[in-house]
Image 1 (cartoon, rainbow, N blue to C red):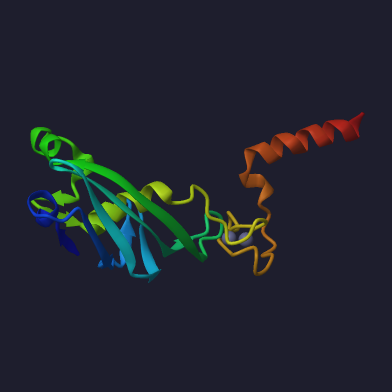
Image 2 (image 1 turned 60 degrees about the vertical axis):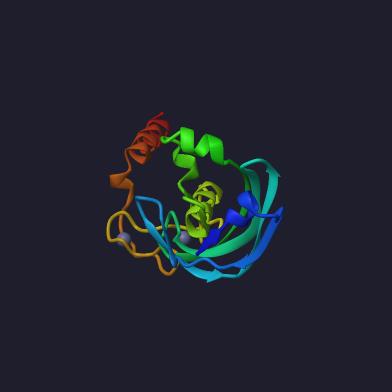
Length: 173
Ligand SMILES: [Zn+2]
Ligand SMILES: [Zn+2]
């Protein structure tokens, strides 16, 4: 969705307040792609603060379907985002390399691009389906939250074998 802000720069308006909606249905961070399973229209405000300068503010959330870090089961996660950006058109045209302002295209503001980078910044570092998720069996790949598969996983974990040696040493004494 594009918002034309010429009125703000050249017209008499000092404020553009508009209900906006995201068009995107996935968030792709370059490594993984997450489905947006819920989004709501929200209010976007552009406030003129000087000649060729305005401020953008908005606040909303998206619900993303992100796999659990341990067992890979999808976890629907609400990601709140806050838009709090200042735009100086004089600066934007001078500085061709400023990637931050890629959401400004001529005299249009691209809502999806603006929100996309905020969502990336607001995404949780760690996603767990539950605090004590047991994860996947390293041998057979079974989801250990559902059932214990009975595999001997100790051989695969070198830290565990060191631990076992120590235990054996204790026994021998
Ligand atoms: Zn899990
Ligand atoms: Zn197993």
